[in-house]
Length: 264
Image 1 (cartoon, helix red, strand yellow):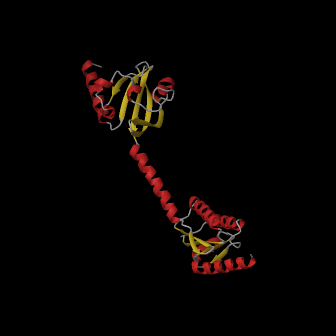
Image 2 (cartoon, helix red, strand yellow):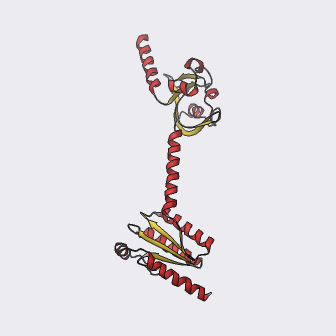
């Protein structure tokens, strides 16, 4: 390769690297910066001339820098590609970064340093956290426990049910019953489009748990389609108090409360 061709290729590689919206840096075995693209320079708030030749850990301060967990150190020592996530702090500012480090080799295949590709994923992580919080908030709103009358609580279930929602509903209902010493829990599934074996088993478990706490549960809102599905699946709900509507369930709940008070 002629010197002119090599210079053209070097300039091309440098131009391409400077267009990458991620930090790309390379160090020698002594962790001196030998390459840093424009994104890296802007991130560090310094020029390439001032940064190249300095120790990478003097500029790139994270909890793993200059420690055995440093990805550049690991890739130089093992020859393997190292990936992960960590934090970078600058004063009172904090950024979450993802990295991938790979060994830098010469023409003979000897490891002479390391290359690291770093992406700021702070906003992505925050967005995912907000999405998780929104999901938790929606879950909280979708399974409310309502005080209907005296010793009677109701939990209306709406939408598609899965194990997580059913477990959350059961925990909320049992906690509320214990706090208020309620006698009857009405579980209304009018707004549930379908019941499968998993949902039915959770409903049975919820009823058993309520009974163990000395209370009674009533399942309401079973549609004709849901009733046919339960029969076809061979699910036994004979031990549950069931009523067609929430109003009918409330009537039964009042009777059970009245009966319980007489017996006590």
